Image (tube, rainbow, N blue to C red; front, side):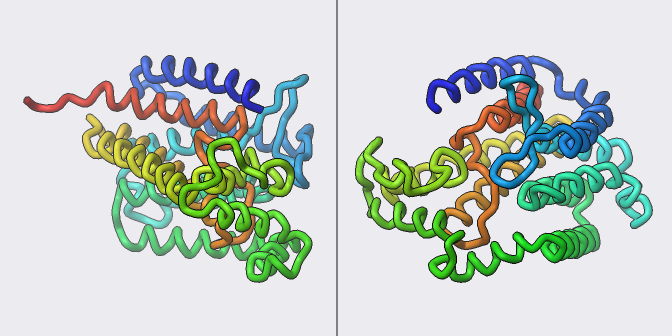
Length: 318
């Protein structure tokens, strides 16, 4: 796992550097095409996609696996920021807002069919960008109601999602609650300072997907609650820096794009840790920059490249 992930991280670092060197305003010209490609790839998943852990989310080209939903997050950030910048007056009417958000909503629905948690993150990205572009209460309320209705529909039409809610409420009563229970055992056995780096017992097989969705439980087992808090503080500092960049961006497009990156990382951290400590039903959300996964780290670092590109254009008065 470590060797394979290191290769992806080196590729991701190079990608971040290259993206950061390009003026972020250029990406606005191609935002619609990014989203078209994302929609095409999401449709392609249902035609030639490969199943993993009960869900079809991957496209394989030889030995290389690619998860289109990760690219879709990036495409949604760039497209929504661009459309809100170019057509701010459309935000003032329901008709205008609906036309603006037609493509993003199609993208989100395609994602939700197989991965509701990722769709929730994507919906949150779009909602916050729209709210920052035009902070009117009716926008927030309308999109919030729409989001809740979409969640209810997708839970009602897929029995396994309703089962996850029952398992969440009483994981000790169901066989499928095994992962959650083992995650809680790992956190509890770590105490305040943990067993020591590399000394986890639960990661040897007790916690399924210890390197992916449940990696925070292993961090807490090895480094304790103290180590877990340090990780949360690092995320808080990263989000603070993104907030500073968004506040001081030279234009609205840069500010909205970095706001989208901010909410993407914040939501993914919150959802992942909430699952690990059983504050919400189990989902397939990874912990940004830490969980194992090549597609995730490549596109996360591409987002960091976009944020750095915006930061390069900031000119502070002396």
